[in-house]
Image (tube, rainbow, N blue to C red; front, side, top):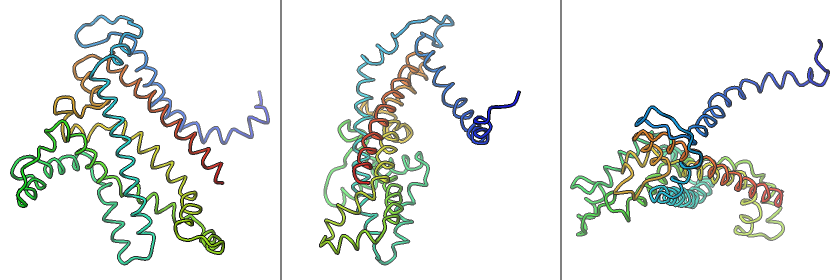
Length: 295
């Protein structure tokens, strides 16, 4: 039976998209469905019997003090990292977009940490922040007559120390995104603003910022999602300690799986997915409205 004309015209596009959809389904949709089913059971390595428990795992996850602390740490980490990275990356991009000497070298230097393994960065900065005599920062503090600071062992400092490390590694990546966006802004817009009597600050507000909205969307949305799913840098620097001071949602989920509580760990994962989708969807909606307003 011949295919309808409309379907025949769309067949090439369907064939081009099909492999990506199949890969997406196999590696994302199916695992999510299996995890959702697992989260409704009491499956663990402590018993061969598997029972349907409904929403018990979700209730346990949402009422667990550790989980609530993990959510707080993940949100704090994500928001602070995104704010600090953008506060550093945008001015640096504006500076390196201007005609300063050695700007190519500076771009390479600032972007360099982003290509390093997160685990390598974690171990490197663990050495720098070490409270022992060989810790670089404490060596500097002692040289000026100050006492050692237990950067990674103090519950009040540990999360902030990890945040500093993450900002150092990734602000160069955000900077490159802003640099790319700055190069797409038409110089005629700046000339038109100058003819209207706009100074540098007004040109920045009326020309540069609207032109950077797509870059803001990329850096903020991806930065927040990456911050929420922080795992490897925490494991390499503090392993969630001291106590639960740096535990995040994913480190707690990892521990539940390690303990054999697969149902509870799956519930953690589904809750994390829902929160990430809600935050990502909300931010995308906000940016679409901003783009429509300034377009």
